[in-house]
Length: 472
Ligand code: TRP
Image (cartoon, rainbow, N blue to C red; front, side, top):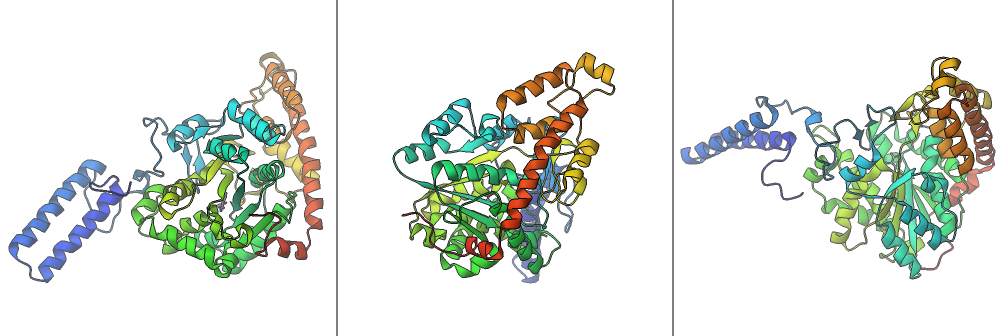
């Protein structure tokens, strides 16, 4: 999308107009010939007409068009059918109680569906039963997974890369989804993992100090370690530390920065002229860990090791950009596995917010808090009265307690029985919620136990650039 002859968005046109206005002024100030000034004015008038046509508004210097008129991503549009759902790294919302329409998202982003064939293949190649997140369509979309498996079958290894933006000390269960799955991938494929903690990103986007962001990164690392990662196979890093410590990492950041234009990031992320320049160049920093040469201590300087990124689908814009530049700077494109969002207690219209304690179950919640939150706040697909519920049954598709069970209950048969019983009315909302509470309480308690055992020394080990137990 680099060759922008005619402007494609109102914002682009607005910027062209502003530049042309300045050009006319400059020519007049420089006392240019009448012919030159006239030509510049003609172009200005034409741009103004185009602008009015595109936006229905008159151009006004200093008043950019509203952000909504800028396409939030550059994926191929699904015939304009995706008007309701918003999915980008900063916003997720939909009007549908069942949540975002993920099939439409696959079309819009141009990724591929994780179908039964792929799930079976992962099972075959890894020699392990597929993780419930794969069996249940939670990791629902991918890019280039077949290529990764083809290579793996020919003894060509790959590595995992995932990350977290440390915006507060408190993490909720939704934050664990990519890490639980990444841990499984690491175990079954026996491969290295790098985890990026984007403390720099949170400093740029939020009203937080650098010190706080860095402290949150270290605190979050403890929760990540508590997921059970092997220190011999895992490198966790804070951008604020690693960017300065690794010349190879920074070189890759600069390579990406040279090959992506401002226009491109505006198109992909919706940045505007008033965003700080740190934000505008940040995507290069999230791209760099996708290249094995960013970690010479692990990959011995090799730049051809393929990367696989498990992440929530809202991070895809970063990696569309990364895949676009990779071949131009001589690196393989990273492959991806995308997850759906973990719904807020209030319903699947949005993802959870770390800043509102009642929208989610936190990793620090007590058994009592878990019980109260589920009972009080979990949106129910049940009927208003027991009589009606028994008669008509509940709707598991919009019921948050049921959705949470699909994430955390291991037994497929038990889950299916719960679904049927709830839909038939045999299982009441209170009973369904009790099942969820009994699943979450021990899970969170175990996490808290493991986190308590993570020592400062261990965190330091995980976060020190060092060789891992692999031979490349
Ligand atoms: N930007 C992500 C966030 O705010 C953090 C992140 C960095 C990430 N690199 C990643 C997430 C790779 C998934 C995969 O949470």
